[in-house]
Length: 162
Image (tube, rainbow, N blue to C red):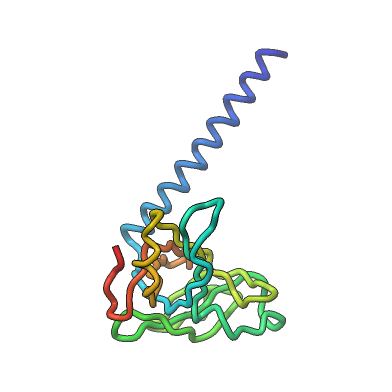
């Protein structure tokens, strides 16, 4: 029985490592191959005692949504203006239909705050809050499946804040 216990533990460890490495691989692919878009944001709550300095983000595409009329999970369809700033076109449950110059962003609905795209917190080094107070846009990379990854914040002049 003891021999089987170690075999089961080893198999679980291998499965966990495969899952973890696959997740890292997918994020790296998204970083290198994803479409860069800018989302207009409204920063909220710039400090957390437990987590250090961070900014909770609320995107313009996430607001003014009647959560009672949409599915709990779906896709926010956006198109980009000439500066790469995303504007919400519609919300839909499936990946299709998708027209030319439209992009998918996965969402989950929040009962009291519109939709959540999964990139609602931006952490930064302690003492650097003053840099990010002027943030106007969140930059995310998205892929064809609607996965998104927050990569930085931009100011009103579309310059990345570093």
